[in-house]
Length: 140
Image 1 (spheres, rainbow, N blue to C red):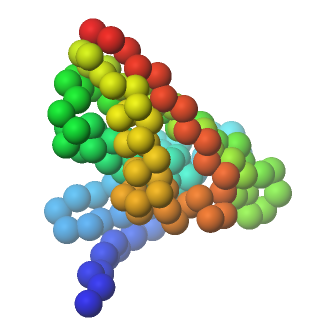
Image 2: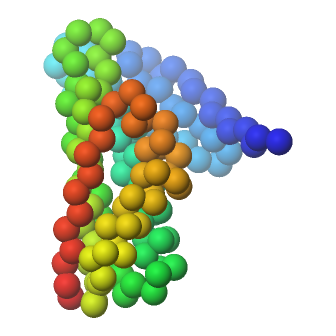
C-alpha cells in the first residue's frame, strides 16, 4: 500500500505562505513589484528539494561503497520561462564530492543510480525538465 505525505499551507498575506508538515514549518515568499522577499520562492524550494534529495542519495551510496567522503555539496541552477506559467525549462546540478582516495568510477556510478533509481524528486522532475548533472572530486 502506498504511503501518504501531507503538507498544510497557510497564506500569510501578500505572497507569503507557511507550509507545515508535522512539527516542521517552511516559509515561502514571492516578491511582487520588485520588493524584497522574506523567504525562498516555491521554485527555489523545489530546486532545494532536488539538490537535497540527490545530495543525500549520493552521500548514502558513497558510504555504502566504502568511499571516504568528508562532504557532498550540490549547487542547483535553473532557467525559468518568462511567460506564465513560469516553469523551469532546464536544471543543472553541480556535485562536489570531497574525500580521501575517492574512486571516480564509483562516484559516477552513484550519480547514475541516484538519478535513475533512488532520488524521487529527480525522477519526478526529469520527465518534464531536462536535468544535467556534473561532478567534481576534491581530494583532501
